Length: 291
Image 1 (cartoon, one colour):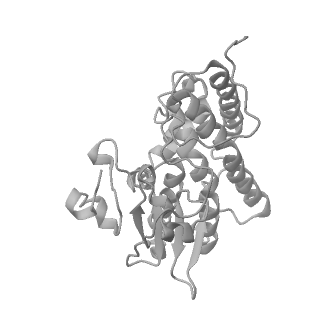
Image 2: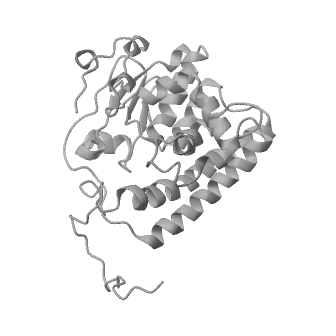
Image 3: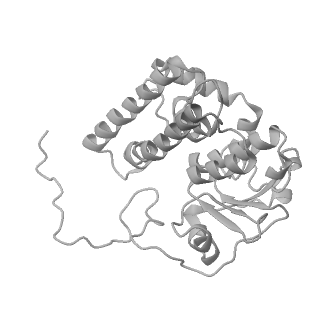
């Protein structure tokens, strides 16, 4: 397809603040803080600063699964980071995560607080800290880590690629939508083949691999990401659908999706979490919700 108005890159790229798109107000080509503000600290050793995007849900899902499995030390405070308002560029947040992305976890239960950023790193840190949701045999552990890192490398094509151009770009463009749709469908086929032979991604055991992949690809086929399930023919990936629904039915998964969520149905929101009882007491005044 030939386009006579095709974009020609300049010799030197310069940043234009208003470049369009859903996240234009917070995207910038430099790092570092924009304002001074310390991160709040609650009563538990584990402090999470996040938002209920797929990357954020990975960690709240893991923490709720740990608590459900009886690991009382996994109790945590979860603070809302409003990325569209630039909370991730505060001095306190940048100190915890110089990459200014959500989520970030700070473990105060050590002699010197440990700051953990990147969702895959947080999942691995928690799995090793509590000895849970990561197989102990060399073969199955390696398989779980294979799929954990597969997600870290694959999801940018789903989110920043397909999701951006299909749902968020200021105008629809055929080439990038087709390019990233092809890749996302290939990824779904990869998952479908693996889950056709195994109950979970690493085998018979539910692990951090599933917790990493499910909020993205499970959410996609269940119709919760980008409104694209029909477009992608999600139902045709029968093994991915089976796995997605199986995890979706877990009580910890239901709770994990609510934490740090400030959009959608009020019954599905727990804007901040400071105690397990907050799930029963979730009202605007008790959890300090802001829109």
